[in-house]
Image (cartoon, rainbow, N blue to C red; front, side, top):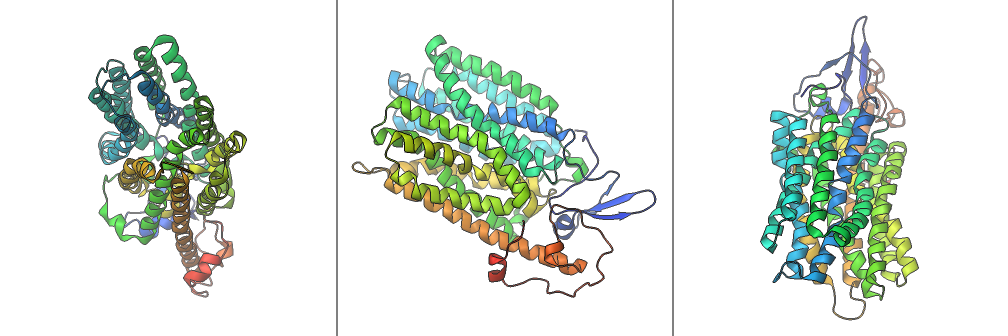
Length: 486
């Protein structure tokens, strides 16, 4: 697939050596850690938007019609249980359909990365459009639970996976200073879509029946996702992106393991929170309708909060904000959720927690670019999605096992969720210390102080007059406590 531009950008800045006829751009992070990849020549300044805003809009709509659509499964679940749609099926089997779609979306990621490398991003996206449409149309004709497993579970998960992997790395390639803001806008589609589809799916099931509801969803998602697949353009060739489906060498990097830990623990807490909150409303005496409102507000919080998270990430540092908001989510669960016993308090909590609960999904692209560099980002994300198959598959069963039969039945699940978010924040704290150390080494090489190194700004060559005059890296404790925009 032909790239739309020929520039290369990275979240760590650039080094410029301006000659009479050309400009040489070198990403400091990729130059040090890309394993021998050659520096590439460019003819333009780093891109920070341009056609990327079209890609942001397309990614928003893809997330709206994939993750957002998948968030409406609770509506289908309520219909299945209330009407015994598939005789003989148990509650756990129905619940497994919803979890299966998420885990399959992540499990298919290495194959999606492979198709991107061999055939291009557009082919990967069109495969996703095909599988998602097939899943929804197929589910409309399902008469037994195993057919629902294959359609709404596995096949829909494959479609969502191809579309997700094909789009998740697009936005960071088009932005430098506003990377997190743009990524936040793109990922907000899942929250807004979850709210819209939760209401729309229920209305369609009531008015036109389950079968036609599936068919309408299939037609609408096909039209939107197909259009977006045509509009989206990557810059893989321009930045020399690695598209290895499984690059085992990444496991040798401590910073990547910390990033994986952040994702693993975050998703464990996120899935339990997402599926438990509406049922928690019922456990404190609220009605089913009030419980659905709580779920809708959680999705609304995600939709409105993610662009704000992205904006602050660009200003205060992507790793800083990701770690802080992850910690804040754990504290909210401890301080508010455990004591939320009324409808009003739960409304406040659901909207507030929605704005920060999905911090991982909002910031993984920009943070991954900070940690691994744009060249290794596709391979790093491919492995990340594969690792996250485990928590997405088992988080909800773990939450159900923690549920008690009497008293405050969700107290153990609430504590578990809070602890998982706090553990994820601890991973980010040490990842931040690693990043500060990397900037200290860069400052030593260029003869600058760390305060003068901005990871988002271009770094110019020829300014190492004091080369080696400062210590390359301070102690871990000092880096843990030191403030730096990273």
